[in-house]
Image (cartoon, rainbow, N blue to C red; front, side):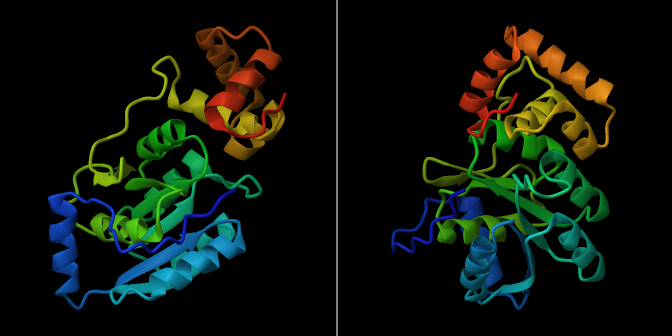
Length: 243
């Protein structure tokens, strides 16, 4: 999985007037943004944290590689912003379920999710789960700083995305209107090589429910067997396709 690029080019990412105004407000205040970072790759977590610590208005409170550890730490020491990797295949919870859990326990915390996976599916799923914004891991670290600052606006009304070199506040479009969010999440986990039984354990849902989501998704997509589904998943989710 690739990391957010550490490019620090003097050419800043294009930003909307809203983001520029927010930057000016923060730079003129004494408020420090408390930030938690979660990525299952320690090098990414520590690298991003090191860069963000150089910002005058940021405090890095948590740097975790475990979703369960982050939940415990946030309970003891809440933050203003959580920067979390959407794909955490080795953790007990990730993706939609993890974002929903964060939102349930920390309703006022901004949640920025980032991913190296297929943007359309991940961005829309994060939006529906309750995230504040989405950033691809191909984006620069200066852009990440702008997204974090924008997410701190208490009057924020929208979903922060990064497209064509600029920050936007437009909610993402549904990547495939034929599928429900539950079906997308089941397919995402299957794309990582998980079986129906493993998906049911991961999502805390019955095997029958997961099988139903998988069967309905296949019918909507017009794929007749697991091989055709594996090809679809490889293309759409950019993850190793499993049976």
